[in-house]
Amino acid sequence: MDDVIKFISKWLGWGLATFAAAVVSLFLFWASFLALFGTLHDDNNNEEEFHNRYSGTTHVSSAYDGQYLTHRLIKMDLDYGITTQETMRNALSNVSQYLKSVNATCSWQNTDEGTAAYVACANERLHDNFYYTPSVEVSNNYAIHRSDCDTNTYLMIDAMRMKGMEGYIVYAPGHAFLAWKDSFGNYNYQETTSYNNKGKPADLSIDWYTKTIDKSYYTPVNAQMAEQIYNALIYDKSKGRVNIDTLYSKNKENAFIADWYFYARDKQHKTKKSDAQLMLSLLHTDFTSTDKKMAVLHYLMRNNQKDKALVMLDNIPAEKCGRECFAAGAELGQLRFVIFKKPFFIYDDYLSNHALSGKVKSFRNGIILFIMALLLAAGTLIVSALNFKKIKSTGKV
Image (tube, rainbow, N blue to C red; front, side, top):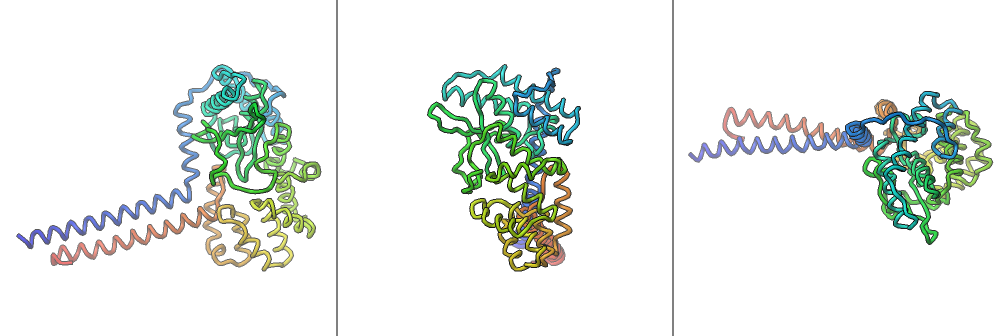
């Protein structure tokens, strides 16, 4: 009887050990997937959730109304050849539907509490009409019910304008959100993207809001300045039709416009020594700017200053190091970039098809977790097979 119990316990031990190792392997594979494609997974879930509940709308006017910031930006897209007349009409119609729904369902009282309630309601209507996904140009995204942090904020500014209030956009490194003034003249902030664009009051103390001391960040700007900045944001989409030189000459103090100006000069191989020196000076306060760092890095590489280029490369955080950064690392002979250049480019190409981009941190973490999962799975199969044979043939491990 004891021999039977021992034999059964060996089988049970083998089964539990194999099962536990398999579970850990599956967990590591899932963690690898989330590291590599977590943002894409979330965006797809946002889209699916939206289409499951969105029933469409009746015909809403697509007439252009220049009093609204969103309409002016959509028109700007058309003027720069970024969108078509049909897409513009769809975008205007969807924006009009949003504003109509806000006007119909969101009451407003001229008090601080009343304004906060109106903002919350307008954000919920935004959730009803647009799902969250990274966006750049307003027209092509509004037209298919997509919107992100800055495009959300443009909509919210227009929703506030309908009640005679002035809304502001606040830019943070890699992000943007809404602001308005209360009766004391102090700013209140709304994070518009939370819960697939339902929004919530913004808590700027949390680490999610990247900290910086450059005055272009965390300083609310009005709709007119937002238009100027939007010109710069669509520089790439416009294929150079935006006159970035003129825009920069009028807004040299603005970090976003400066980023795109130096980006354009870098792309055209026009960066001069004085440009590089200026960017290095600006980086003392605008230390989160990857565009300026990349422009300096390329300048140093073109002028055979490899040691300084390597220092600049190391100064770019892994979570900000994308395709151009990876290519620069490979060109500078850094082994980790040379070995993984092709796989990273394939990864980035795939994400680019979904309006995203690859970053070294997510790629590195995903690959490490995948290799760990693969080794554990392979080891589990080998050890389990050997132990299985021993138990089956001799009853001993």
